[in-house]
Image (cartoon, rainbow over all chains, first blue to last red; front, side, top):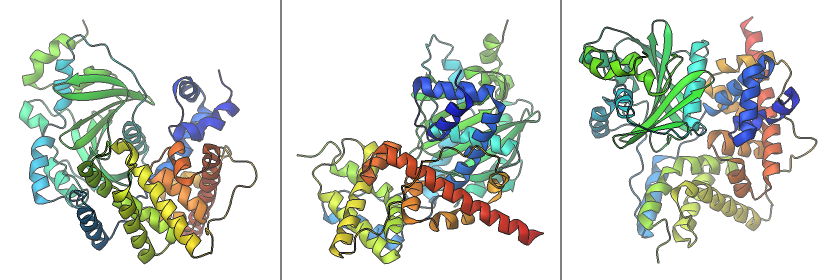
Length: 287
Length: 180
């Protein structure tokens, strides 16, 4: 086992995602065993998150944006309209239909992976790590919600004009006919890659569940156990004892974080226990 | 012949980085007008360049390299030399291992205070914090942008974050004293 000095000398590299393979595994193994180093790691992670969430420091003025677009056109380069800083009505309507599947998709994944599939395990993406970090901060009371509501429509409306993509939370429990297993708590903005991502907090029997959403142009799911299904690829990671599922669909990227015991696709069962799901769920239960 | 990243792909992707480029231009120039001019010059150079990167994932770092070179050219023409000073002195710090209670309070800092602290860093430190922690470049990408060894990136980043910690801790201390 590496000693504490060795590990602390590599913590910055680990936090900056500059370690690979055995070096990375050695740091993770030590952090899981050494409370002192884990505490130092947590403090440093908090510091870096505070810095990274300060983004963006500057936004290009609209006049400059228009000037560059014109310049590229004149130069013979087909400059597409840059993404607007605020969601347009059209984006809202288009993305709303896609986002209705947000929480239902893990269930679809589980069904598909009942077929034989050999998982490939790789390091989690920075988006998955960010989601897990923010989940932990929220659990510790370090990430207060900016709006609190159990109403999905209210939370969806709150994000309008705050992020440059559309967030439309489904009311899956009503549509599936299941009992109310989890409740929506609220939401806030979190920083990621020079922009804001949407953070939504749920609670299931006093256990917190986090959903983080951003544009697919900002975050690309990668790493972990890959679970392909219906043209999508879901990535399952265990990070700091948390279960993190990430995927992209129709222009958005999602991360679902929980500390539920179930791993991989089985974690889908927990939220999707509706009466309509029973025929899919029964075969997965332990015998 | 078109480069692997063709005109359409270049135009779409290049515009996605305009906020990041403007932010970096503000780091280099500290002036909104100069920053806008630098962004424009960067896009002019990029649009006419024959050596575009082979895929979109490398485009952002390539644009930053163009911007920094354009800025260095401007500085040379002004015969004043780059304003950034060499801050590499002493041993590079690793993660601070001592108990620092102020760091615990960092989570309570508003984004604005963090931004002010970053803006108040010395130029070379501010630049590397922006490149790593705001723009998310890897050490190797930063080394390419700054045209320096990756080891220099690591040591400078360590010192920059150390300075930033002190600035934020000092701000937190003042806030706590005022609150008493």
